[in-house]
Amino acid sequence: MYKIIDGKQISAEIKEEMKKEVAALNESGVSVGLAVVLVGNDPASKVYIGNKKKACEALGIVSSEYLLPEDTSEQSLLELVDKLNRDDSVDGILVQLPLPRHLDEKKIINAISPDKDVDAFHPINVGKIMIGDYIFAPCTPAGIIELIERSGISLEGKSCVVIGRSNIVGKPMSMLLLHKNATVTICHSRTKNLAEVVSSADVVVAAVGKPKFVTANMVKEGAVVIDVGINRMADGKLCGDVNFDAVAPKCSYITPVPGGVGPMTIAMLMKNTVAAAKQKQK
Ligand code: BQF
Image (cartoon, rainbow, N blue to C red; front, side, top):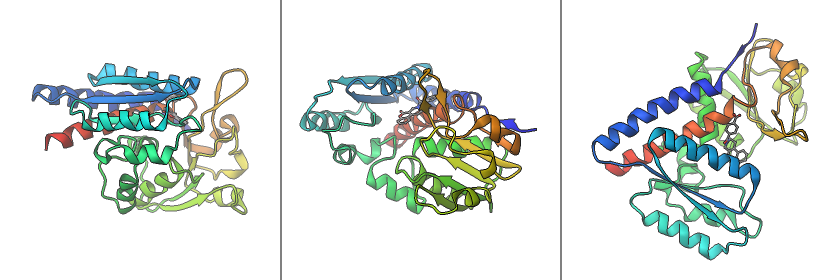
C-alpha cells in the first residue's frame, strides 16, 4: 500500500519551527520583513501572493505588499526594487513571476540584492547553489527535499529522474538532489525513450506542466513520485503532472495535488526570509 506524503502537514511543521525562530529574533530586537511585489492582475499570482501574506501573518513576519498596475514601466519597477534593497526593515524581496511581457524578468531579478533574494533566482544565488555553498535554496526544490527527508526517505545513492529543466524547478532540483548524493538524470521534451528512463528511477520528480503526463507504465514498482504540477482545469480544479489514480498503486510514496509540493513552496519562502533576517544580524 502506498503512502501519501502530506505537504500540508509537513509545511505546517516547518512554519511552526519558523514561528519560534521569528519570536526569538523579535525577543532580541530583530524584526523579520518580507516585501511582495505583484505587477498586474494575474488571478493565479494573486492567489499565490495571498498564500504568502497569510503565512507571514501566522508567523509574525511583517509583510508589505506592492500591487503595481499591469502597465508599470521597467524604470518604476527598478526604482521600487532599489528602494526595497535599501530599506533595513525589508529582509526578503519577492517579485511575483511571471511578469507582464513588456518587462524583462532577467533585468528585474538582477536588480534584487542577492542578500534579500529569498526566491534564490539571482545569478549570484544560482551560482552558489551550483557549488553547494548557499543560504537561500530555491523554494520549490528545497521544499521537495524536505518532503522526502521528513518522510524518512534517504536520497543517498538513489536514482532520481527529474522531468523538466526550468530554471525555477528542474535545474535547481537536480543540484539539490546531487548535493544529497543521489544519481540524477534530467529529462525534457527532447529526451528519447523518456518512459524507459523514468521507469528506472527510485525517485521521480515531475515538473513538466502537462496534466497527467506521468502514467503508470513510466513508474517502477515501489518508486517515490513527487508531483510539482499545478495545472488548472476547465472545471477550476487543480491537476498535477502525474496521473495520480493510475500511478499511486505502484508507488511507495506519492505527493497529492493540491496539498503536496505547493504548500512546501510557501513554507520554504518563510524559512528563507527568516534566514535573511538572521544573516542581517551578523
Ligand atoms: C496546494 C507557482 C507556477 C508559477 C508560479 C499551495 C501554492 C500552490 C498550491 C502556492 C506557485 C505554486 C507559487 C498549493 C506559490 C505554489 O495546496 O497545492 C500553495 O501558493 N504556490 C508561486 O508563487 O508562483 C508560481 C507555480
